[in-house]
Length: 145
Image (cartoon, rainbow, N blue to C red; front, top):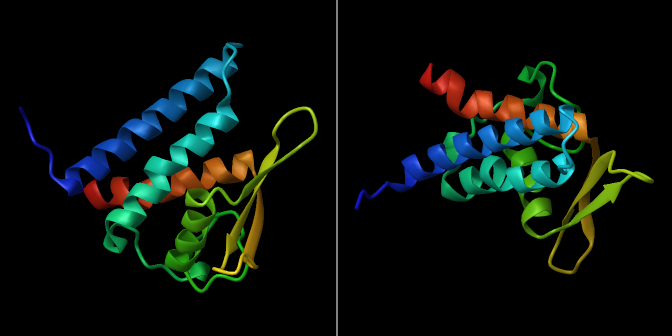
């Protein structure tokens, strides 16, 4: 039996999550009956929650003005603040699907202990995918290559 340390587990899980997301997106492009929005939400577990829960050091602390070509997000001090709020919304299922006949975006909300919304942000699916790509690059590709 091979034991994997927690740092390696988070890295491997994130890599495999990203590979699965790409596979589902290709299947959708090929006309297969898959649910890319569902997979994108599932993928946030491996790309946002696991790394954030494991260690803050895996997510670089960058000021917002250094995040070129990222989707805009409001009321955040820096990347770590955004990831904290984004993680909270995902982990506590404070999300709402946006769209009529098909999912076009997702609203993310952070709520305090009293249930009052303290942060909210709407993202299109493309913007969420862009955040996932850019975060993955920051955490692994630039760090390891």
